[in-house]
Structure formats: structure tokens, C-alpha cells
Image 1: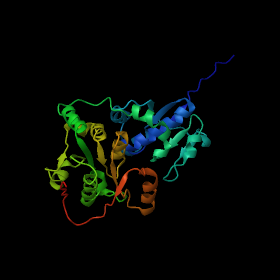
Image 2 (image 1 turned 45 degrees about the horizontal axis):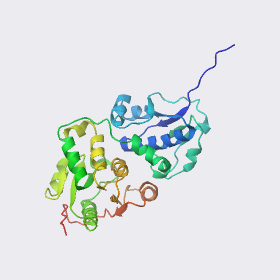
Image 3 (image 1 turned 135 degrees about the vertical axis):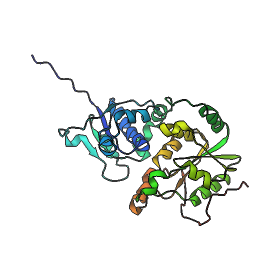
Image 4 (image 1 turned 180 degrees about the horizontal axis):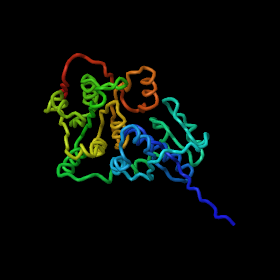
Length: 299
């Protein structure tokens, strides 16, 4: 009598992009896995082929969370049945993906809250930050953010400066966003998080905006995501990184301000506004007003 082969079933998620993208991909994979009472595998082979990163790099970034997943760096074999492989074809919320069978492979960005809204409480527990490195300045800063009417302001430059698809949010956007919040809330304190703190210090007045720059954030960007998430309110960029910082903040009375443009491509931007940006978040124009640096005055 032959020995039976035990096949371990799970939901396989092929990672692409970077941290904010991975969280969307994990979220849909986790939802589908829970529907089948099975586990999630995060496959990193595509990251290796594009950036030459190793699985340990992905683990380090995702190590700040309590993800219910295992990792695999091997390229999926061609034996995968067509009905078990789902390639995202367009931006949106194709909820048919949640009807896939166990042992399915998911490939795409899946940037819509609709893919995981039913398991939001579970995700918020698993994406709670519990593996952050320590730095002397981290805890006092976290206490100030939590004890004040704080606003996290995310300014993403870096790769966006060279991107034809993405654009850097204008100073006019940040001016309008701050005014929008000041008209609704009192005693606000603005904290700027950015991959270009030198530029931010030159364009955001220090008497109104505090630029956060921690040494540990350069090696572990989830530190900034954590700090942004514990602020009372958020002014996000057109970035999945600050999208998740805002989503993970579930405090009562939270206001999230988001740019009205995520992409330079009009059809893709329309899809992002429809599917990625929740309707409950305030959308502010990024059109330039030609006034230069940000100046926000209290009423």
C-alpha cells in the first residue's frame, strides 16, 4: 500500500511594490484565507527579480507586525491550474477574487478597502506595531503625539521626483489641507514625516510644523508609519504608506485629508479616487496656487 502525499493548502500572495503595497496584498490574502480556514504564504520571488532584495529584507520590514503568514522565495511552478491563479486585470474591487478556491495564487495590487473590510478588526490587531526598534527619542515623541491634537503630515518625494506616473503633492495642497483642519479643530499640532526632511524644513515654517527625523526610521520605515498612525488626524500623500498610517488610526473623530490626484494618468486616477480613497476621507485639490512655501495661521 502506497504512502499518501499530504498537500498543504494555503493562499499564496505574490508580493510586488513595497511596504504599503504589501499590506494591501496581505489583507486580501488574509481575508481569503479566513474564508477557507487556511493560512497565507507571502511569495517574494518577484521582488528579487526586480530589486535583488532578499526575503530577509521583506521580513525585516514586515516584522513590526503580527502577520499570520509564512514566506516563500521560490518562483511558482507552471503547474498551477488556471482556475487557481488570479491576476488583477484592472484597478478596482473585483470581489470575485474572494470566491477563489483554497490553494489559490493572487497577483496584483488590490488597493481597495472593499477587499478586506469584513475583517477590519482582525487586520487592525495583526497590523498593530509590536516589533519596533528602540531609540531614546521614540517613546517621548510617541507620548507627545498621543497626548496632543496631533496631525501627521506625510510628504513623499524621493522616487516620485523621477516618476511619470506619480507626482509630488504641491505645497498648495498641504496649505489647503491644514486650513481645512484648522477650520474644524482647535489646538492642532502638525508633525511632518518625509523621505526628504531637509526639503521639508526649508518649506514648512518651524513655528507651525515640526519635522520628525529619527535615525532609526532610515533603517526601519515602519517607525514612521507607526508614529503617523498614533496621531489624532492625518494629511496623507498619494502614497499607500501614509494610506495605511491613516487607516490604522481608528480613533473616534479622526479626520483624514487626502489629495484629489494619485496619478498623472486620468483614467487610473479616476479609478484610485473611486476605489482606493475611502469616501469618508476629505479630498483636497493639489492644484498649484503659486504662493510658494506653506504658511498656515491659527484663527
